[in-house]
View 1 (cartoon, rainbow, N blue to C red):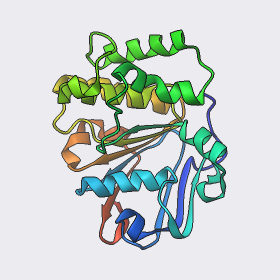
View 2: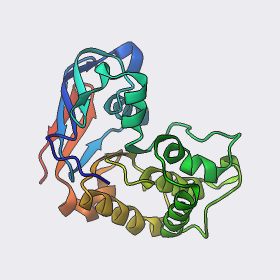
View 3: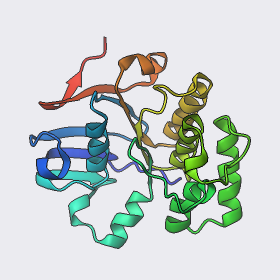
Length: 233
């Protein structure tokens, strides 16, 4: 991955989301995420967490202000540029995001097939390695609907970390997930940060990230009064 080092990786500059479009409070959001940082955002409402990640991805209409990724304002980009930038984002979402007409292994590598020139063999090799890292015996080839909730969590992690993304938007996969996946998840987060990726880890409970406390660079709360910085004790 070519490291981005020209300023904030992601910046919300007085960004006021459309309430009708997102359900987020229509007040200014201000935040900067630098390369290599890991930010915690506590959001008790899962739907708000999803919409906040959408806003970071340029998928929420703004009343005013800017959301910029890698120095580019999402609002100023054309479709080709939008797709190219979103190809640099790895995401775990609680929103239904697996196409039932497509076997799981294709769903895992689809983004990389669409946005990169990597060979199929290369993508499959990475998918197999990451699947094994997250406790799967290989890459599942069945429909996502046939996977258990635990295995669906695992393949969601595999898909998010594929292709060395520059930005990771992670709606917490650990709450209610298999305990044995904890170390794999944190190792993957650390590996990505060492390459210069920025991480936003959206949680409902602060207890889930305490063992990674020394690696957290800032903590925030997403509430009715917007995005509020929280002092780390």
